[in-house]
Length: 396
Image (cartoon, rainbow, N blue to C red; front, side, top):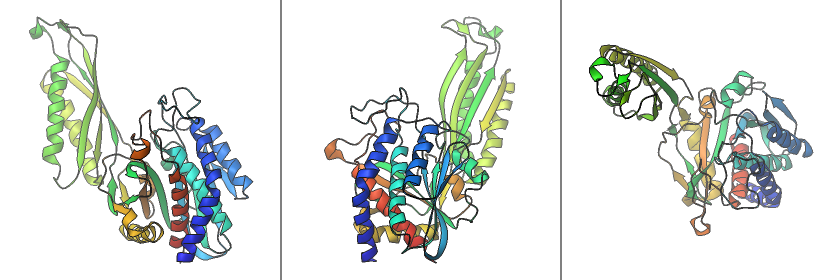
């Protein structure tokens, strides 16, 4: 065990310069979801340069293969490759060169780390067992989620993957720490679009109108009440209306229509389905009861992410072997969402968090902000750890 850990850490240190270069290149040239043409070409080039068999999948996905010389399981490692529509504010030499686009969620880190893992596994392929798929997945940030598309394209088949691992940056965790949680980990995420229609008119003559703003106000309160009183209190659920605006209207004008947008999240798939029906029924009937009408569209998004308990506890043990027991922390559930959840619905999965923060260096900004960055030493840790987890968990 100690010999393998030392061998992998040594390889990760040797390859750190290359992995740093990969990350900075990807960070400088970010591309939005399902538009990652140059990104996937770059990843494909790096894999081919190191004689790692690879192929394109979907429009912009890449899959590499490492075949060990010994028998073992077929497993997968996943990194996402898309960026966000955010203008970067960091004053670093590797800041984004694509206006209005930034790797603000760390997908450049995920991809560079997986490339680093690929280099380590390639060095050790004669000593390891199994077959390891390296999945560089597009479109994590946008529905329907690149994971769902790649699954339909057969990314988990030929040969069939027995389990999958995913790694994600986590600024609240300091560099050198790893976070993990067996069982339910992240929420499903559905988008809600509501249009309330009434009858507009003068604000001083409400009796001649049907006020859609009043209907919308009642709807917001009633939908919140529905979730809080209909859901089992032991099942985490969140309903947020994040946007509301009217079609016309002024200080003295009642508008014709009001539009609302929001998100619904939960950890329980049967309740999720039930809640959709309840929200639909409530919105339509309340609007009618108040003299108006309501159109509600619920766009089903990513499912809840479940970390297979047996696999995740096994992986946690390997993390402790590689990082030290004191550096592996237990995480709480999160109501944020991830399309890695699609994989977790298909095969045993473990999605964990890589510490990237460093308050001493001022690296504390959360993901999805224009000042997000990492302590780049995390690249060495992330690539080495994932290689170790892959080798250990691929053993039959």
